[in-house]
Length: 198
Image (cartoon, rainbow, N blue to C red; front, side, top):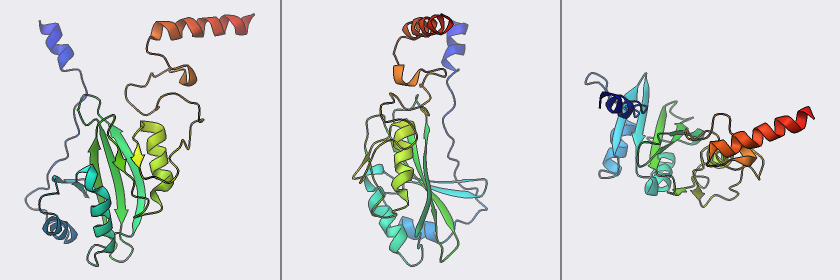
């Protein structure tokens, strides 16, 4: 029983998304966002000097447009889009947008959560720089962006199977020979090694 308990605790911890400390005052754009979308902002996090706002994926384009166009926010540059994978969570993916305001010199991370089969609206219409960034997230994690003008792989070959940055991707995965059964893959690898020697 103790062994089972140890096994149950072996899964990696979920991301903390800690709330801001009581003595840290949020920048003006965060309360402005909360006033504009009082029922939409799901969580505000502060960690090592960075502010993160978690919002529903279905509203990402609407919120992104507001953050770009509102004078007091003016987040006119999307410097990066990335993701993290938490397979033990129903919404396993965090899709994270790093935003910067050239006018105000402030930054924020906008985060949405998505399940393995949940589409995320593309923000390429808000920040054109997100085009290749979303393609990389699709290629590496398999997060599908609806409304993207050219959603295809950008790092891996077009015929590659699987998404290498998912945590359940095989560490020694064969890529184009990705299989559910690792024994079958080991047999194929042994056959290949034998053929190379011969």
